[in-house]
Amino acid sequence: MRYQKLGNTDIDVSVVSLGAWALGGGSVWTDKDSTAEEAKRLLDACREHGINYIDTAPVYGTGVSEELLGEALKGRRSDFILQSKCSLNWRNEGGNFHYERDGYTVNNDTRAAAVKKDVEDSLRRMQTDYLDSVIVHYVCKSFPVEETVGALEDLIKEGKIRTYGLSNSQPADLDEYKLAGTKVSDGVSLVQEFFSILSPFHGREYFDTCKKYNTVFQTYGVLEEGFLTGPEFLERQFKKTDIRSRIPWVGEEYKAGLRAAFEKWAPICAAHNCSFAALCEAWALTQYDRMNLLVGMRKTKNVEDTAKCLDIKLSADEISFMEEAVKSIQVEVLDK
Image (cartoon, rainbow, N blue to C red; front, side, top):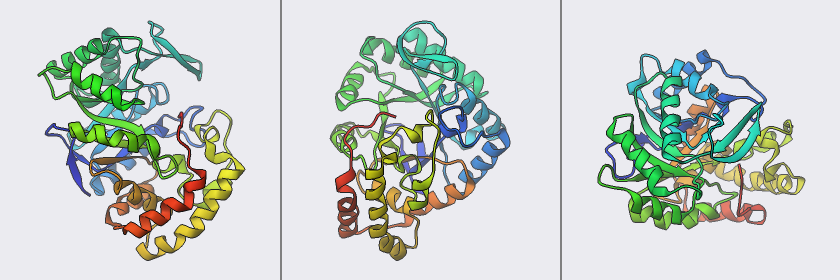
């Protein structure tokens, strides 16, 4: 495993991080309900392969993901860098309507009181005294950035969080949040945004701003919810509420393009003795020197396979060939 500092902090994080969205289950991930014992085994595998960075959020299963991680982390909290989020909550205390799901109305609220309550709720669910990082889940223009940053920096002073970041944002948001910071912290240490070989445009637009501040770019969706793991996945069917039924890759035109890409990529996989998933993850690591791969893994074998991507050294020709193979089916904007 390789490690890097989280922005300008002294926090060492593994280049591969565990995404715990799917642990929440519910109507978004309909093929499996996880248990605390399975979460424990997943963390065992992460520790075995050097992955120390975990990402979750209050709304992942409306608290379920955080609760399962809380049980799995008992007795080894200090072994992991724990990251959750703020702004999306279902307390019906204000904010902007975001969605209705599983009997809950979720609002987006970046006011100070909401941010602090989100963190307190996460600490309780995960049975811990502090979070290493908190991400503003959806940047919101309805409330002052200075108020949101002030709440986050209060939480740092109180020892409840160590740093913070942004998600579902734009480069201008990073500039704005950085300007709003004080000497309490170095401000935003990472941005968490969608990025994959099928949708690389938003990330590439963001990299220059990240470089300006030495900010980590943590990508979610690098495997496009499984669609980049191989041709077999393309045959799966999902319920309408499932996130995997609502992204472009379920369309027949896109599936045909992906099948063709897998055929072209197969010799590269053979040359590097790797899976399609590890190949796409290795490609992502070539795109930015402060990249962090946030990968949703629910099986221990997925952890082992993902860790292998760090050993793959792609040539410039291979990178170009991979990108050309999917150029006709790339999309510019995704909403997950």
